[in-house]
Image (cartoon, rainbow, N blue to C red; front, side):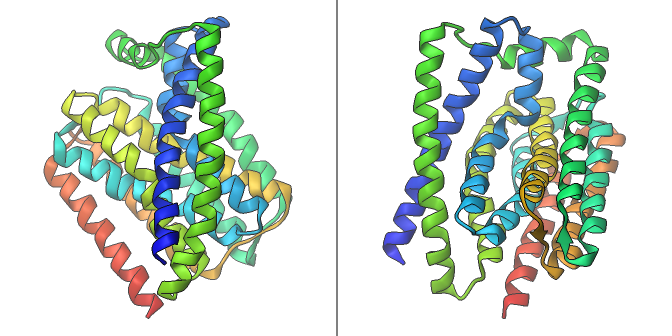
Amino acid sequence: MIAATAWFLLGLLLLALGGDSIVKAASGLAQRFGASPFVAGLLLVTFGTSLPELVVNARAFVVGAEDLALGNAVGSNIVNVGLTLALAALAAPLLVRARLLSPLLILLAVASLALIVFGLDGVIARWEGAVLLLGFVALLAFVLRAAKRESEGVREAIAGYAMTRTGLGLNLIRVVFAAVCLYYGARWIVGAAPVMGASLGWSPLLVGLLPVAIGTALPEVAAAMVAARRGQGDMVLGHVIGSSLFNLLVVVGGMAALRPLALPESFVKLELPAAIAFVLVLYPMLRGDLVVSRKEGGILLVAFVGWVILELALLA
């Protein structure tokens, strides 16, 4: 147990280092080959932070730990709203200026509902996985088109997020460093997490839902709290909503497209409805005064703690 925990923590460290490096490399290379800072920043804000989780889930899927991968993908969505966003709002109220975020939140609820419908028979078929992947392509087109209508201030903030050095050599080194860190980080996490879970009597699914989902989100939590204190509420919400959409459409959709993916009954009855519930709680917060206050952050955090307690209680 002690050795497995040490490997798990070391894996999380490598994921954090690799994730930071690959985001900088992607931004630098995109701009080097002609992308505007705004487009590069937009894609990084909405989907860039999901890359470490994608690598972990890909590793889990390859070695046959599909339940762990599925638990991490859906658990991360609950963690994104209930922990990352909540702690960021507690650090400083989040002012939301980007009009794009509200429709993305609706699309997140729709994607979660679609996954429930697909999983009613207990399996997400390959064609259903393909539908989810096509949904991501459509989402990408929508984001790139709708973002052009944002205010100049929002566009400048998004472009500023992508600012990094664009030298080819430097960014290739970043890619290699990221690849090594992400590979070994994912390998050690996927190898150690089931051992930790078994010592606690937890299923691979629960391990993915709780320690893996929470652990892989910790770098994002820290970054979100810093961004909140800097007044970058749009960045925080963009990360949370974009990462959640990526998890459902690309991670789950990609796994199902490769081979039919068994969906546990609890996912249809508990985890996915819980993910939708967090979205429904968040939506009126954004549609009201466009600020996620400390009080609202506290509500989200209490709801998240309640969900964790419920998951553990059902285990007993």
